[in-house]
Amino acid sequence: MRVLVTGARGQVGHELLRHVPDGFAAQGLSSAELDISDAAQVAETVKRLRPQLIINAAAYTAVDKAESEPERAYAVNRDGVAHLARAAADSGIPLLHISTDYVFAGDADRPYRETDPTAPSGVYGASKLAGELALAEHCPQHLVLRTSWVFGAHGNNFVKTMLRLGREREELAVVADQRGCPTSAASIAAALWQLAGQYRNAGALRWGVYHFSGAPACSWHEFAVEIFRQAHALGLLARAPRVKAIATRDYPTAAKRPAWSVLDCSQLIHSHGISPADWRQDLHRVLQELGALDA
Ligand SMILES: NC(=O)c1ccc[n+]([C@@H]2O[C@H](COP(=O)([O-])OP(=O)(O)OC[C@H]3O[C@@H](n4cnc5c(N)ncnc54)[C@H](OP(=O)(O)O)[C@@H]3O)[C@@H](O)[C@H]2O)c1
Image (cartoon, rainbow, N blue to C red; front, side, top):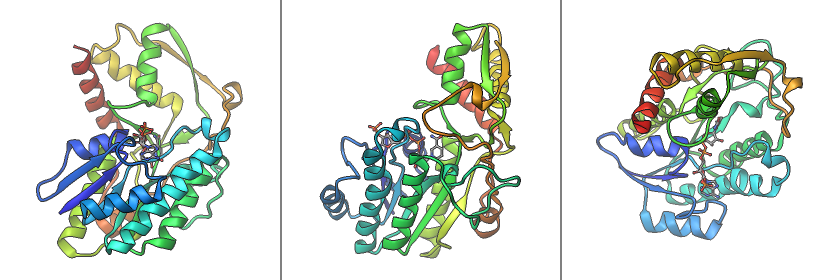
């Protein structure tokens, strides 16, 4: 099955192309090769490559910058998705897409379900929600995986920032009053390929919006402590820095962050048999990979 992967050089795009399962021929295109915000380019590319499935890993992901350039965030996260959705629908093929916990207000007291009301607090979340809606409007065969706190060896993420700061400083301050679910890019890629496989085997899928993130939930502070514990044990850091727990109000950012980002992933387990991965094990693999890259 021919699969077009957009955003091929991002964290998830990279993992998708690293682990293409047997039976699939994946064509990955970077933003330079396919700008999804360009409708004509999207239509022409899909016509030329004739994919049988599209996985959209492209997105505008600069959460704080989005507050000052909303046009760009919407051009990619809403309009870009709409262009892909129309092209997929015109070809009669499905589109697998990735969205975010930031579509929610972040003030719940239990894990968010797919049916919970959305209320993004910033431009990035609002643009991603608009993308979900555009996808549903234009492409009947669509599946959205909402995920959170993505990390991997490739690209920019919290794990790599912590490692860099951990080498430079003896003490760090990390927010302890935001809870969420770290998710490895590799586990998202694996889930997407499992879904693609189910579609290929059955000729259909249970379409719609699903939650997929790592387990268990933690705070950024707990995530940082675990990163340093493992990095030290693996010899990536000579010593683990002290990690001071601070409140969100002590770490101001341009975009408001949800205090509660925990996603209930039970629907995807029941409907597609795909379970969340333990992010601590995935973290171990990512740190090993980063260690090998350093060596
Ligand atoms: N990162 C997170 O913590 C997080 C959390 C929840 C959900 N998500 C979602 O997960 C998905 C994958 O995220 P990620 O972490 O892999 O993001 P990422 O590393 O920032 O990758 C996104 C990729 O999209 C590309 N891109 C940007 N604008 C584009 C355009 N107009 N046309 C084509 N490609 C374009 C980027 O290319 P350039 O670098 O060349 O611009 C980049 O390679 C996204 O849908 C994101 O919203 C991410």
